[in-house]
Length: 451
Image 1: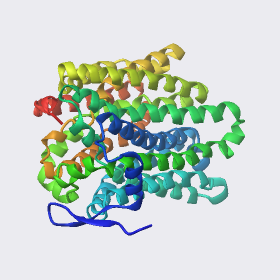
Image 2: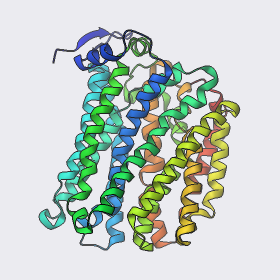
Image 3: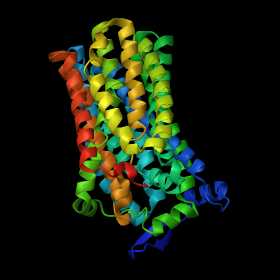
Image 4: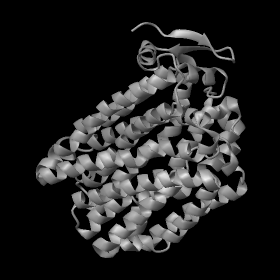
């Protein structure tokens, strides 16, 4: 591969502007023409879907496989709690990954950063398929699983490419809500693909074969999906439009710690603004799968199908959120959805113990609310960052919001539900809604921001 070409950013720092992979991708697809918002949207959706696919592959396995495979020396509930503790590691290491890869971005270019981070993400996910069980290697398998989970977190922290910001900058003035929703579609789409793979292997293999080798195949698929997503994203970040925005400091990677020091108020409020939707995210995806399989005796494949249907409902609700936000404003959508999530928290978790019908009501209602809230939760404060720090600030807000709002949600929810009762899960979800409303009230002009 030829050496990266060098340019000077406006601050006078040398940076590797492109790699031969970037240049080849741009030459093949861009044809020297301006990239339209619709084309950017496709790249964003592909990229986010690949990230969430990796996320859900691990999340589903942490309920169905890892407790028996790596923690057979404890009961199933405790083993699942151990799995959820490892689940949180990725969210803890995302900010560190963001800091490290921002340095790579500044010194070696966005293409180099994306290539390393997405290969690390796909490689860490695929490596989990080769881990030895407790029966064959003792606790070594669990330690290696933790290491792979840390690798996933570091990679996700570095996978921020600025494309959602680029999409927002190129969106028509009267379609800001619609284009803010598009990156969020990757979550339900990733769940549909991951859930479908696991449901297929659960329904076609014996339990022994699934635990022995069937669960490993979705992890292999992750690597191939990440390669496709890498090319789709490089095909955009190498375009002249993105280069122009980058060089004008609209999407300039600033030093991580400097950004935190200068922009800490915006970062803090931005991390708390989407907590209602981020807490709900895991309370309709990861937690209910664990509760149902541990306490109701239902088949996992049936519940995965329910989750996949719920994900379709989520997609439709996200599309609706884009239309509604363009009419009434993003802040109004975030505020009203937080109130609805708060009301939902008062009764919905108990439905998981109300039989099959109650489970369906809980899941479909939860996914509908998630689609409305999560659809507008991305980048609510990005317009408040100074242009020179918007790129790094947006990544930092996203990482902290996931850490605070979602990283420990499955662990906390299952602990509360198993020791106190399902009603306490509702109280936990209510706290997220309160945080969102508080953040919105502190900074009332978020919903009117152009970006």
